[in-house]
Structure formats: C-alpha cells, structure tokens
Image 1 (cartoon, rainbow, N blue to C red):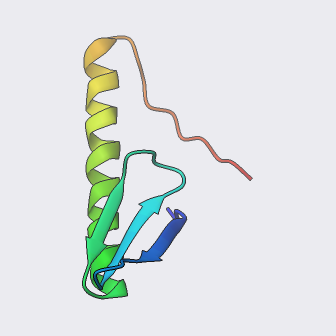
Image 2: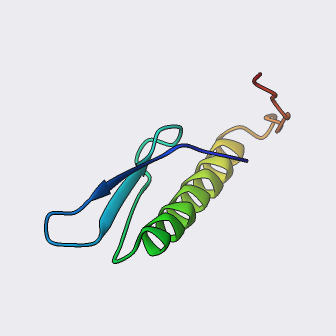
Length: 69
C-alpha cells in the first residue's frame, strides 16, 4: 500500500512526519529517510493493533479487501 506522508523540517534539525491516512501515526529522524522509515513502522504498528482490536471485539467480524479507486 502507498500512504501519504507529510514531511516537515524540525526547528532543531532533522525531520518529523505524519501520515494523512492513518491518524496518530508520526515519525521523526535526523534524515528524511530515517524519518520516513520511522513513520512507516508507526503506520504498520497502528494498523496491526487496530486490526487485532477490531477482531477481538467481534468474533463474527471478517477482514474484507477494499479497493478505493
């Protein structure tokens, strides 16, 4: 999947970023690459956690692929 990162230069140096499609996901790093890698890990963790939470709350729930064009 491809997500949209909003990358910002940090006042004290380095970068920080958020993800438009995954509220609450953010990353930081000394370089652009480090910051985006940190953000990617945050996105992955938040999505995995939300998936597990949703399935644990409803035993009848199912995961269904959704294509948004």
